[in-house]
Length: 265
View 1 (cartoon, one colour):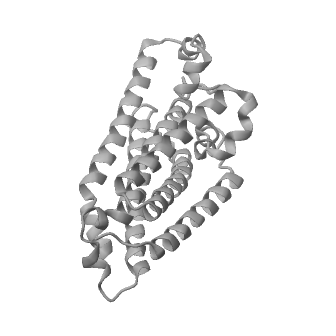
View 2 (tube, rainbow, N blue to C red):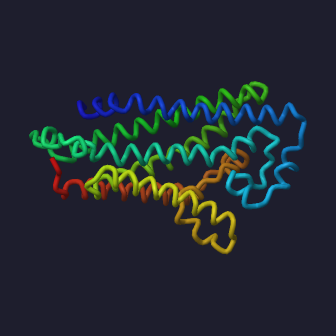
View 3 (cartoon, helix red, strand yellow):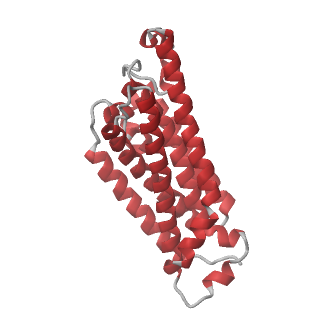
């Protein structure tokens, strides 16, 4: 429990910064929606004139972005990206930062097993991403309500946040696994963050080229689509099952790899 409290306190400032960044993105996005609404411009026709490549990069598909639900679904891609980076960085650092700070001999020479130290660290990670998720939910409902006649679309946003949380768990586990396998914290964060960007770019490539649709399974950014969640109220059970299974495997590998590695002091 002391380890859990220590990690929560140590990461409080970082969590506040990440949370504020997410709130700002939601605020800025919805203000832009209001700008389009006030201008009386047909934004669907406006964006249809853009090249397909631009539409894909900005997450614009066939949804009706003149409606709040459709417009918000576009931003889900950016929520996923920011949440993924936050989760993977937390996971990579929290597992190995004692070695980075040259104080591993202090905590790991106490009469406790390694998994008794790693478990509360990962629990702190789960709580952190859950708080981040709740901040995203609260900000989303609040700002949507401001531009949708008081209706915050709570049911739709709740389903979207459930999908987001599963993605956060996946990237937390991914980061923790690399933090346990790689001995250098900087290398672990670099590799894990590189994979996040790789997954993101792969999702863009898959949208650009239909022939590469078979690669969808290799990028978690394609497991849940904002339009399906916000407009059709659909969360893919198969995607959720695959993502949670891989997440559990990554967490398991984290415990195994960390218990076997030589700690640098």
